[in-house]
Every structure is written in C-alpha cells, then in structure tokens.
Amino acid sequence: MIAQLETALGTVQVMTTNGRGFSAEELAERALNQIINVGDNAPPVIAEQARAFRENLREVLIYYMNEAMRSRNVTLAAKFTEAGFPEFVKLIDL
Image 1: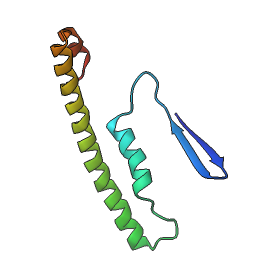
Image 2 (image 1 turned 30 degrees about the vertical axis):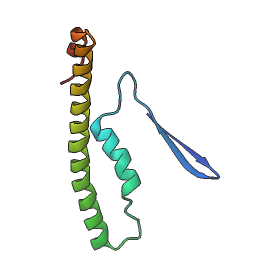
Image 3 (image 1 turned 45 degrees about the vertical axis):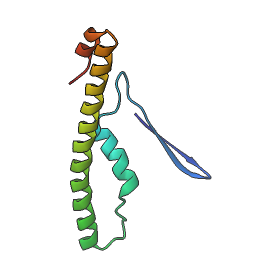
C-alpha cells in the first residue's frame, strides 16, 4: 500500500506491506525513486539514456539486496543454532 501526503515541507510517501517485509524489487524501486528522476522536459535522447541506466541500476540493486537478505538469513541461522534453537532455522528462507 502506498499513501502520499502533501505538506508545506514537501511530499511524504508511506509504503506498507501486510504480513511480510519488503521484497528486494520493492526496495529497489523505492531507492530508484530517490536516485534517478527523468524529467518530463528532458530531451528524448537524454531521457532514453536515463531510463536505460535506471533499468540497469534496478537489476544491480535487486541482485545485491537479495544477496544482503541471504547473508542476513545465514547470520540468523548461525545465531539461532548457537543459541540452542536450531528448529528456528527451518523458518528462515536460506
């Protein structure tokens, strides 16, 4: 769900999920919205290059966000096992 609020200070956007965290794809889109903005008045050649760069960057962000999520899950699995709760590891997507 995306909610947008206009204030005197600017636009505030709130995104939520239901029963889960954000996916790498959702996080990448949020990051891209902060990193790259293709203006409506940009010359067509520049706009096309910016959109192509944005798509390439999206794939890189998704790849490394998935890597970070997997790495975190491996760390959690090790901590659960060390703490004597190996059954919790089955709950983690490894």
